[in-house]
Image 1 (cartoon, rainbow, N blue to C red):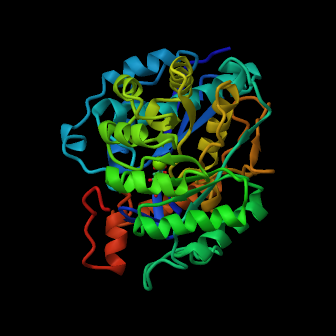
Image 2: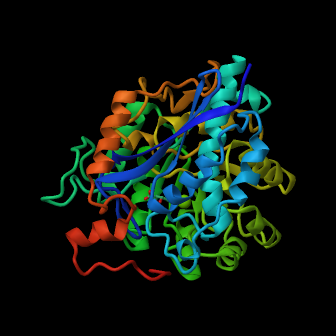
Length: 429
Ligand SMILES: O=C([O-])C(=O)C[C@H](O)[C@@H](O)C(=O)[O-]
Ligand SMILES: [Mg+2]
């Protein structure tokens, strides 16, 4: 068996995205992703997926060049190689994370976000070579299916007039009735039993009303609200108090560990985060201060599936919960999330996934949710197959773009509807 990498293919693509609202603006009609393929000397191809904005591509290209001859089994070596790739400082210093809402930006985090796709691709190739599923390479699954929650968004019916976009069939959701209707459809289509509402869009009272409406429509279902740090400590405490009987957790109500710690201390509602604990370096302060009760991991920016397992082990040690965050992603990443989630014993909350919002994919067969769960594949590797024709079509869209959509920018998308829009300063309320 020859596990040496002989070829690496990087394919940036643009995928359709509905007009989903968040505190920074609205999603653009197409969003960039990067599809990574590693090919071994034996002709086995492994696939991975990560963010596709220019700053990730700029790193992925020189990194890919260093991979020729690298063994797909040498996962630790990927990180050593990545350290050799210089990060342009302007990419991280004072940079506003215009679309990600994923916390601090550092050179390491940028590297990890790129390496994660290669780690997944190597695991996929290794699994195919050995005839083993990725979860087996990670130590084995402890469950046969992974539970996800419905990721509800305030949403316009369509992207602004005149903007080329794919039509979706979800309709608008800009008030409590719209949010409940969206949740109903999520439940009907996918069987989800817990609901997360992306908040920070309307004043807190309106979002409290939406969560109350969800609680009435779906009694006993776990509910979460995530304003991405848009509230002051006082506003966060007010929301926590008003919703404490129905919330499973409140996600990133306020920005930064000190503010989260204050909210946690003054309310009994558990706090989750994918903004103030996004790197190993941020764990100590947050856990010592009791700022978070659930860390939402994301294998992209935590640096892959094995780092996600390490994060879960640290959380377990400190009695902090762990679950999963998600940005716009396709089926390769959902498969990777499902494999690693299947191996984490202390995963007790349904994971987030944007996947239902993505009408397009690069797989021959989409992953499906049954009863809100994705079955853990036992096929070799990730258990997914790339659809090269679809990949080519979505790459062609990226090639044809004049650059406007190659970097996700939710504020720019909002300015098309509201020319006065500027990224709100935080806390917004
Ligand atoms: O849980 C979160 O904070 C997210 O998923 C952040 C994302 O950027 C989400 O708000 C989005 O895509 O609009
Ligand atoms: Mg969040």
